[in-house]
Length: 602
Image (cartoon, rainbow, N blue to C red; front, side, top):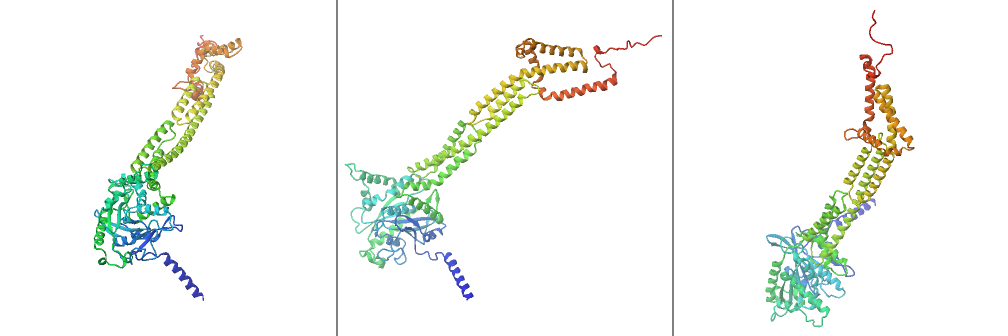
């Protein structure tokens, strides 16, 4: 019982494994590549047909046959492929399964085009105007066949109707959008070669070319009917296709149309057999490899291209040339946007607003120029260009915000640095206006040179206000601090001159300075009145000259100099007295209390 269970489980796993890895073994048959959805309004891909196409590694081309319902498209394709009805595409009056969506013959024809092997697929499309379908569905089938194919055979029975011409409006739009770029090497997207194929029972009278030209003549519109104007506009636009269209007539193969699949070539009308051979030669002469975005497509690339187109056609309510143009321009738009972003990303932020605006204009102009050189379409490409411009504006907005942020960071750092510098200058050990002004000037210059960007104007006002306040505060305390320093200095010099160097002139000068400072302020009751005295101005000038200069900054070197001087004096007091006695003292203080040094005489 247990063995039977595991055999069952193994069988199930083997079944799923085999079914999951199964692939098409016989490609000599038709496969659907595009099928209608249940509502028969939109199209979806069929993996069977895509597998048949994806395996092709050479250049690929497609010949599609379109036309009204029951117009003999499938039989015509079998004739072009030299296939019988039993092995080829399903013929409507012979089989129950009629063509739904778009089908492909699984085995392509191998032809040489300009010395290069090309695989040519033949596509059968669902007929127009059948029962139970919307006009939008027919338009999607026609639009997809137009974009996919290199040769589009428009199969019409006996004559050209107005509805047949109106249906060409999509092909005309494609021609107007892309035809201007098909010449030369830079081929963006070449519209399908349109082949008018008229099947009729008579060949006398007008030729098919004359019939097509007559059908495309302007319809008189003396009353100014808008509908007729639209019809005539399509006729005018068809001229854009120029040599991109041709016409061919094909007689009916046999009067017994329902028996065609049972007849051999010997039973068919000899004129039909002859014209069929000429049609094959004509189709072979106008086949070209499929080119998209300047590149020849192989099988996998063709499938990817088909997926993009089908997605674009299914988006809108009706097939839109503009939506196809957007599909083609999407990659170019992304590359141009990337080019703009790279150019803007190389900027060294922050930078002045005008410089940033100039850089934006240059980068935008370069990106738009690249788009103009590569874009697809003429009229509808403007929407893609507008989209590119909008996306560049969004990128530029982010760059502006980044520039403002970087500018704010830089200017704030410089402002803080200047503020700290001003605070340091406020507490100088030896107050000097020259050093303060030099620091203020240096701070102002560094801010002016280094602070850039949109925040500069705001921070300029802030730093000028801060520097002004700092200078006012320094000036306010400068005279009082200098006065206190001079009083202390005079007392120190009295002590130095009296007890250390014992030089009477130094002591007297120190006493004079001390008496002047004290008596003047006592006489005029305030120290502020002293600051307007010319003598005070002379003292301030001397102080500034001594304390600070580009060569020597006493505020920095005062303590080291004082220490060195103290060590020097100490050395002289100790070592010099032992070596020279008391001869090193100044003469003024060099006297003896004990009388003369002359030797006593007897």
